[in-house]
Length: 390
Image 1 (cartoon, rainbow, N blue to C red):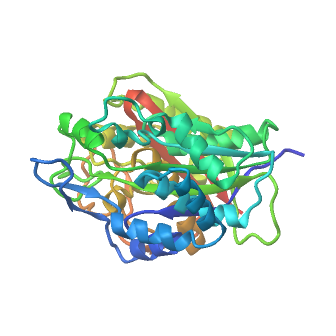
Image 2 (cartoon, rainbow, N blue to C red):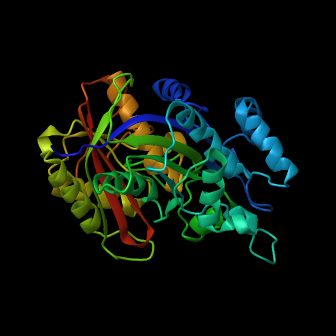
């Protein structure tokens, strides 16, 4: 009998809320976490989706009021402190760790694009937490993971790739289950990088819209529990049917004009899943609201005959959360399936791509069984997964 792998639990920490239900309710109401924030001194505010630091600290102190509270005190006595990003990781993981056992056969996978890069500001030496392996080990040690952490850091496809890595390692028999956490925070480094490309939008972004003018940066943390063993008491499960990550090596920052890498990723994932285009019920796309990305995606989806499948981007709600985007958006996709509701692609009014797409314009009821989630990133990397609601 072929082994199967499932996502059976998840959580997220975003500007729209510190759990999944808060996020879902905000999305249904059309709320956006994007607003004006002054991030770089002596520069005008940017539109970005940023978690309130005071609320983050309040939630961190409130949620870790049980066994972990004493652990935090012990670490404090050992002069161990936590960065904003680490607090986001810990908060997103905590409910999952409390509901599922960690054993010597449990993998811990951390996905991020930039990690604790903000620690580099005004530093002459490299802080230990800047190294992604050390960041992952710090989070793993806090919760008592027994296996060596795995880091997935491949630009903005990291979150989607991490799901595929967990699935394939479980299928290979290396682990029985896995906790996957993804996160990135807004920093001067990231804002300056995107601003150098003149890619930052002047308003809340408009994915796929004719009048889009650029990206909004966001921050979030998200976590999922993945297992090959289904528990009869679980509230839901989504089978990971197929995954793929392809790099078309088109350009250091520009996507392929013909969507080669994304097309190949989708094709491979759907082939493994044995799901044809007409069976896909919904696409959670990358949709950064930049001219070349949105155009490339439209071309790739049309090449796969997916142009009529309902599709959205969540970037106008959350901004682009880098390595966290793919995992966060996968979670919201699964919530859509459970709630039988498609969330609109916020701010979309008029098609701004050369090929048509079936952009979701308003909340609508739908039976969702098969989900396609895609992501694309710098360096020509692309990824796709196919999920089935069980």
